[in-house]
Length: 261
Image (cartoon, rainbow, N blue to C red; front, side, top):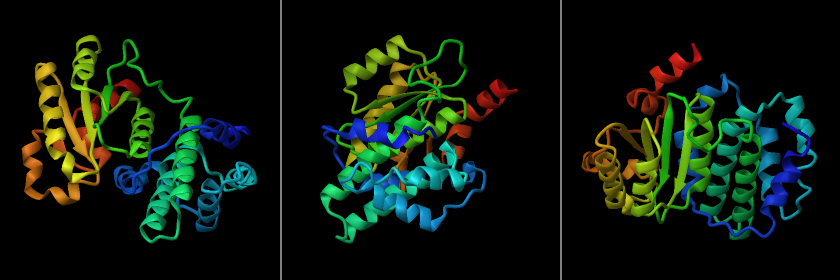
């Protein structure tokens, strides 16, 4: 992590209008496979300080943690895969238990998103790179607000060598235009609200038809816990909250291995 990490994150936060959903924390925690961080464990004392700092109204609250993260050998990947998701989950829990205000959670989630953007700046860009074999379209449907969860998923995918195009609340016309002008090897849709099942099913159908069934679609998110047998109505090739399983079923495991080799 570079010295300006937290200051840069706070500059981005100033004047920003952020929508926060209590589902954001759970979607992050459930979608990220923790074993991908090399078996590292979260240090509770450091995490507690991190949560307090990110929700503080004082932009300097994070300053003192940089050295502690370095001493604890917390890499950018560990921060993205473990600390940020767990901090988001705890903010969500505090919101549910009425021990954190809307302002606390808004500031906290916004700051986590800004930090994630900073540490992910060196990973693959949010564009389909020419010549790459693995290209993923990641969609957050209209009405969903768990943008932090989608960002964490995107960063994880990029570190697997997958180029990611993240689209938040795209209209059908925008989606059709995108599919007509860009090439993708697969798509993922993340949903947190059970009320979005019909919207999700329409998205899956659109993706399949517009691509001529040339790629597969995965669906994940907190809403999976409430779906039951309705999972089968989505028309997706895989419905799971395990990212490793999802990319294997979509064929990305073979592509990334081949690229790495």
